[in-house]
Amino acid sequence: MWMGLCLVLGVFVGTFYANHFSGNRLSIINSSSNKLNNLLHIIDDQYVDTVDINDLVEKAMPQILAELDPHSVYIGARDVQIANDDLRGSFSGVGIEFVIRQDTIRIQNVIGNGPAERAGILAGDKIVEIDDSAFVGKIVTNEEAMHRLKGPMDTKVKLGIIRYGEKNIRHFTVTRGEIPTKSVTASYVLDENTGYIKIRNFGENTYPELLIALAKLSQQGFSNLIIDLRGNTGGYLESAVQIANEFLAKGRLIVYVQGRSFPRRDYRADGRGSYQQIPLVVLVDEASASASEILAGAIQDNDRGTVVGRRSFGKGLVQTPMEFADHSMIRLTTARYYTPSGRCIQKPYSNGADKDYEEDLLSRYQHGEFFSSDSIKHTGPEYRTNNGRIVYGGGGITPDIFVPEDTVGITSYYKEAAMTGLILQFAFNYTDANRSKLSSIKDVKEMANYLKKQNTVEKFAAFAEMNGLKRRNLMIQKSYKLLERYVNSRIIYNILDEQAWTEYLNEDDPAVIEAKRLFREGKAFPQRPDSEAANE
Image (spheres, rainbow, N blue to C red):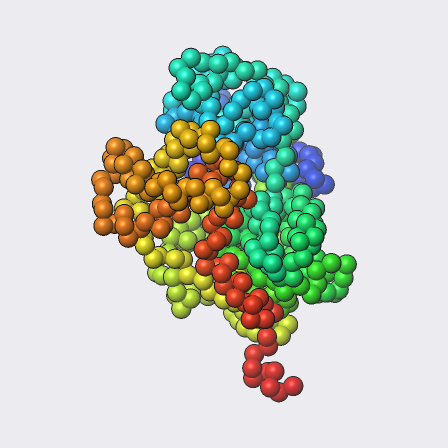
């Protein structure tokens, strides 16, 4: 490992680069010592075998950054586009959603009016060739598939397709086009008063997408709002700030950022937000990170709404992207962000990404934090919100109201069915075999009612037994509701979309139910502690 680090430093010593990425200048410092540079030349000149120095540098770059902290990373030139696409709001590709089953790409959804649909490709098709070369087997990974399917606008890719029920390969030539990616994946009214918005990540278009969603909800007369950040691993700080600004009064601190070479910068609400008074609940869980925690922390510390769920991930480090001449890139941690009360929610780590850090969520699960708020271990000091409520730094945003992970009905049979991917495989096969009938159903509630009558749990159990999961009738009965919910939700996702999938799951989601209770009882705005309120 250290040889790799020396090689990286050797390349940098005595060299000066001047590159730009989003206004950030990357300067490599010229050292007075030639030791590392000399080592590199000695290896190149005298090592027993031929050495590809560039390859060694590529392998060493991630290692040197890993010595700093868990979130400074190196991204090779080949992977930069994929790394950035998710946050840009669009990418150039063929316009399909796919899963990989049995070493084969299976098209799960075809984006409406996209390149693939215009070429005649259908959901359920299997891709077995790309540009006249077989693409099946161990070579088929998500990364490799995206590299081959994405590409510059107006370029062509030839796909070999096997359609359900057919044996012969059909060939389609698809002209790549601009494919939008949405951050707001669901927005609808849960009831006559409550609006719901699910934000998947914080990208370039998240704020305008949110405004559109709020405008549509306003037309339906909502008076309460749930913002669901569960599973949202973050993105751009600026997007989180823009969204928080919609809900906070003028002058309220949203977040501040500070680092050794990064002077403190405060982000405050400008008072132009249109939803400063609406009762608000923010949902978080252990996968809510970074920009999600900025938004949740701003709402919590300003006592603007109630945070519901489980403790968030705990990422309080800010990465600055910097690009090299070959278009590879580093994301270097240059600052920490702090919530309005002054807390940094970054969970503890040793230098680099140590094992304890990587396994933190597993550790939380094992010592019971997902099931009891009493098991939460705060690593930072106490802070106070504007109203004097106690909040904690270090290790994520602790919700105002804890909602445990639901374990009712979980059995070893259910765990194995879920973890082995058998439920996903069955749902996809069932969707394919019944696509004609299912495609005629456009409403999520109608679809849910239809599937409930199809005995999908029994059909799954038979499928699972044929694929190595021994049938356990008592466990199947105990886990029946969970199995039905999981199986049917995936079928709904395959046929309809992510919003329909979310609507179906929200019907009996404990955190959503708790949020609705808070609105109903007028408790969405946190109150000052009783002792302080009594002294006023």
